[in-house]
Image (cartoon, rainbow, N blue to C red; front, side, top):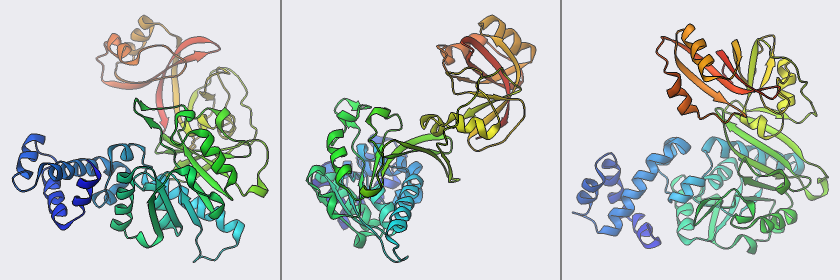
Length: 404
């Protein structure tokens, strides 16, 4: 889809084509395209069918809003889930108000320097911010502008074609950046390959009165700037992203503040300097949420459940008493044995286990191959955890205790 085709999609004729494409999105692609081309040209038909398919995929991230929104494939891939974007926008507004003593009707001016399809600018505008958004791609800018119109926040948003490096963050209350993490070869995990590159992002961040940068949850710690607060966010047990928060310039200090947030519950865990002790395997095993692991807060989770590490290098926690916490899934250990396919198969058959959920950490075992090799046929279920205990490969046969 090019800019001309997208522009036509916004016309009354284009909207009719899109409505017809939505009706055909579950049909055979060739049949759907043939049907639309009886009325519309090939470019418009293709654009309408593309949007219909993207809207269907976008429902997982945007819910009912997806039916009104527009996307590009790359824009949807990188777009922030609506609940996560709303959390960040609310937090940004709260932090700004706490330092400005602003009234409820006031809102900060935010520079969104890598706006993409506009998922974050929509959340920011809905939270009460005034957003000046830029992106280098004219089609992406047109999509973001159309989304602001479609969701009724256009009066709080401007979107224009510009390079992030051309923006003066000093002119705004807050800088928000979501640098693109895709190259022509696919997704990149190297911040130096972001667009804009990491040095440009750091320069913008250093000059901004206050800033928030969205990054991949696996960002290497050495790329996190001094004085930032790094927040890892998990949604329904899956780590979605990390955000680097830079406080007002006068308040920036040395060191790194780490925290994890669980959504939709809104639970927050902060670095308290806790160090988990090491000890023998107990009756229960706890699997910390991925956000706590990424934020290096396993010690804090262990403190919450009164637990210890059965291996000092692995993020499983063990304890003798059952403690429920949103920060970890709990499993009751029924049997622990040195890892051996033959022994594990025999133990599971003795328990009439026919269905297993296999988890692993610090294990080279191929899970799907193991599942096949176990050849189970019982009627019971179990969780099998493959890990190391004091550096020895082990298998734990467990019952679920509580979800995270």
